[in-house]
Image 1: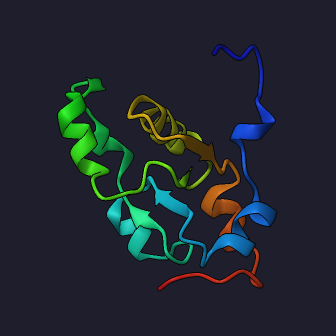
Image 2: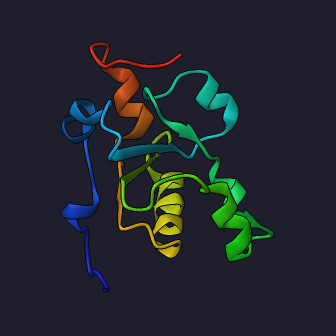
Length: 123
């Protein structure tokens, strides 16, 4: 498929994520650095730094990249986020490349989530 603009079905927001935090059918992938992740993240999110997908300005081999996401259910709704959505966009593309059935992007990301005191966070 080829989109000519934003595709609403591929984007999620707080209202999509919050009620699904305990749902094993959704996995959150934090594309920020490990230090950023350790400083606070959405509960249950897995840390996979977006830079781990690339080397020298190009994707690593499919085998190397697939190993980063090993053990993640490819039929789950996989939601990528970072600080503002830009790094997560590469993670979203990676998920699509690896054949995840339902890859989504939370473009509000940690900047939005962390600004709302009523939302849960880890650590």
